[in-house]
Length: 172
Image 1: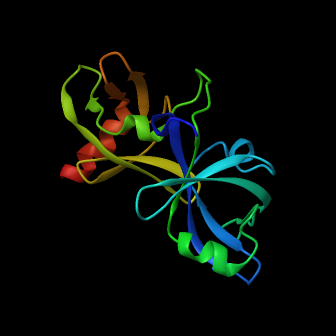
Image 2: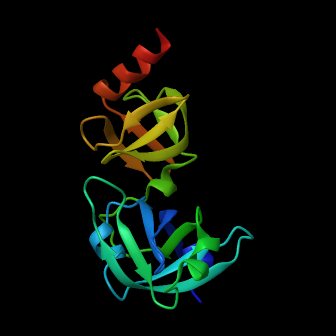
Image 3: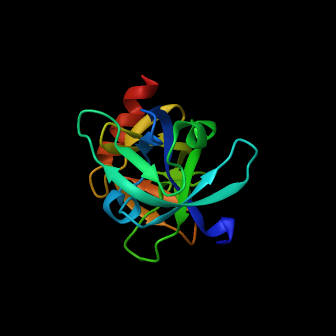
């Protein structure tokens, strides 16, 4: 098995669909095509915190609803139902251009003058856009529009003027 520290959350099983082991999945990755292709391996994090390796048998994106997926060896509702509401993990992709939302949690948020604004408490994907949450305020995670820079060495994220406007509007 992969080292669990090298795994990244990529989705969550939200419900079963039918009797043949099909499930609806909430996607938490911008790399859906790479992560959810037929034959790709995922890890189901059980309610007890254990990881179970599974291979994707089929995946159907449904723009009007959550995508549908089946996993090899989970071909009945009885075999998959116990994993309803469980998170799905995959090995971290090694690409310097990728930003993992989970890596932003705990980063210090600053303005262009390096004044501390807050700390990223969580990240979410709503509809089709990721957000960082700072002081209970949702900031769209869009580089060079709301986010100026990410500095991994100093564990900080710099907001643009537009990003700062969102924070100011929240405090008014």
